[in-house]
Amino acid sequence: ASGLVKRTALKDYRNVQKSGINAINLRENDRLIDVIHTSGEDDLLLATQSGMAIRFFEQNVRVMGRNATGVKGINLSDDDHVVGLVLCDDDRDLLTVTENGYGKRTGMIEYLVTSEDGSTRTQSRGGKGRIDIRTSKRNGKVVSVISVADDDSVIAMSESGMIVRMAANSISRVGRATQGVRVVNLKDGDRLGSVAH
Image (tube, rainbow, N blue to C red):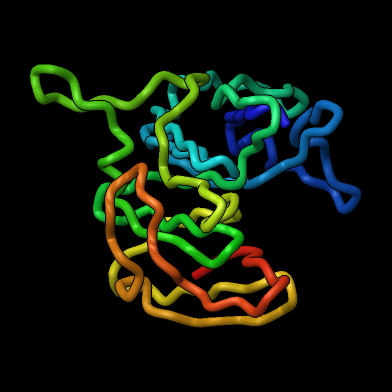
């Protein structure tokens, strides 16, 4: 996995045939994680299984054609890979969950960098990012990130097919670089697979 991102004008997809069209040129061992529609003025956040996250301005990614491979979104360590892409909204939180059923909500603004004068800015695309959640032995690796508001419902699914529905505001809101709290009680040998709205 190489942590690449790609930005393409929506007009490039207006003549899609039944047989489909190529949308991205994937490198060996890469896979598509997510696709989102942006305004051209949005901040995006990439999160990795090792608990890192990077927030950057979408215009740091130049617009490129459908057959392009993309550019570096986050600089990954050798054994890491991207698990999620989120459109940033400072009125919402980032919900991060781990394979052992732990998670947390963190305000999107915490993924901005604060300068000495108190101003905030995004990171530069292609950096290592900032710690989102501690991927300890207790937590395990990150499996999913989504953007949530207090009044959202969240559905968590384990690899064995167990589904749990909960209110987003029932999950603790804590800062970056923390371990979070138990979100789902898993049976022995089961792992959390994903969360969704």
